[in-house]
Image 1: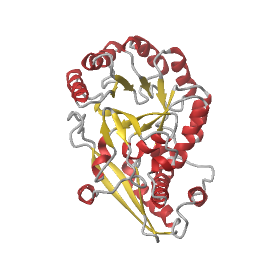
Image 2: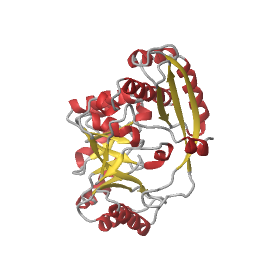
Image 3: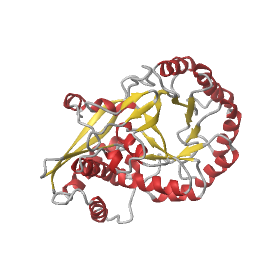
Image 4: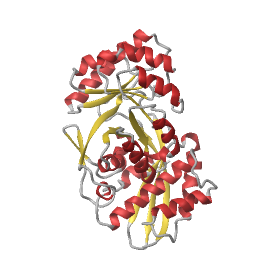
Length: 364
């Protein structure tokens, strides 16, 4: 089997909130790039990537340049192809930014082809540890909401059957610690004691802030505090992790494999979060998961639940999948939600097919 062609498309998808109908900013758009990688066997693999921002046109150009180099290659020799692309980009040891986001789309499409050729779902090809994974509602309890709005949204999520969900602190307008704490307590009050509640800071605190505020909310029983300070401040993160009883999650802002080694070796986090676009695709995602397993650490995903359900289900230390549903509208069918879990199907590959009407509607 050989790769014969490719097609990339820029889409502007809406950052809506179909879970609780409480968007932080109605109509806000997020640019992404989708990829179709075709073979002479009639098998087509699909990939998705983002993190281009205003440089999304450049991201697409990078995808096209790299995808052209895959034509004629055997799509099942994934490591060979990725090494070729790294060499062509002058980065045999890896690189961040647009290059890594671009290579992620290709890597995802290659794994889709590989699993389709084997007539097996990707989660089985990658390891098949479980056929359903825990998932948490994300994107409904964001910091731009009022406390009342966050409470209403949280109750809606519980009514819909979610047993895990994520809110945010580091609220707008430089609030006092007391006001920060009021948000997370308000959400806990709305959902009761038995729901797993995560809280994202998005790198907006200094380590001493994280220790101060984090210690004041330990009685709230957070499942984790996420990205409490600058992602590559490994020693600062380690200070927070050592000081708090609440588990600290981090890693979504790291590019490629090597930063995860530094983060893990510094004991910076209790839970490793891996973004499939920033890490460079499924191949490095699974390598980071194995690295975390060697240190007895669980891994969780960041966005793209329709793809990440496969990776988290495949590995023994997979903990939960972020259910942020912005991209789900691009596909005819995605993994089924059932009692707070995502159920994986036995459809070959990713089990995904683009909804052509949605692609046309979101085309940039």
